[in-house]
Length: 401
Image 1 (cartoon, rainbow, N blue to C red):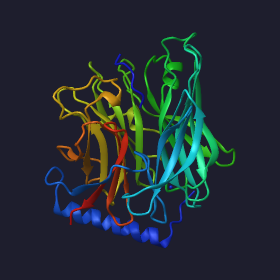
Image 2: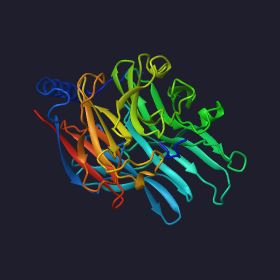
Image 3: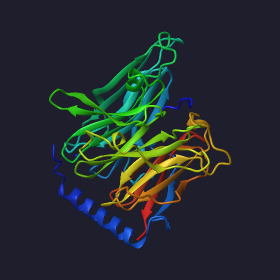
Image 4: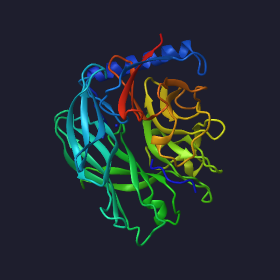
């Protein structure tokens, strides 16, 4: 989510994957039976490296290897590179180039998934800014594809595009930012992304909504835009972004995202919305947006990532400044925030969440953009960016029996 001033066709899983899912579900039910939400942490965390391949949006391949992405600057170009780990995130090799663009540009902040065919998709923002002040800015959400487990990449498609000419619209925001790919159990492929362009075109200046498009394989295009989240009351500020989604049961979707409080100073919080029809409609239209996590005293919770690790067990990792002496102002660059990486969990499919949030990493108070994946050995891997030295950390979470 950009910082601005406050103002699964049916998927036939391999037998090994089915066995793994069943085992994970059993572990989740076992832990749920032994510890209630809000008591002792059900996960023990160990930092395993400060040289990880990237932050949020990582992927565990069918082989068990892990891929992660990050931006990388070489002279006058920005690259998005893909690194690989074969030892559960302890060490990382390779920097395969997914996309590149001449500076000034902004690439990355995306998500990796693997299709049943073995293809790997990566959605990301590909934004190009005019070299001279006042030139048009061109925003896009794009998808790249790899047919060799992330070793080489080529363009796949463009999800959305917008252009902002500050000379014509000095107060406009038309950015397209963070994105998430979701492959539903019926084979439908969605891409959800931060969208400032649609609300602006509909008269909501400086708002940001979540928009979802669906892949049409026959047309080889993204179509059928749906608003996943926005404030139901048009008088309320919407700054919804950085989505991640799980499919709880066939067609039942839960989306967690970064948002702001409707009242000044519009402190960042984490909200959620649900869909019972595979994403055609969302709960913001009827019940509003639910509150997943809100720090006290105008402290911030930002950049969430949601994952499933059992039948009804979910984890949401995020960055927060709730342990700092003073809260950061909403709209502050994450580089200047005093944030740690924490998590909450749910044992009942997201109906309730643990309190208080448990700490994963707080050594530098400069951390941001966490993501979490379930490994083949049934542990959890959290990867995130640490601005203290601009490196990428990985922490391993072990489920308590």
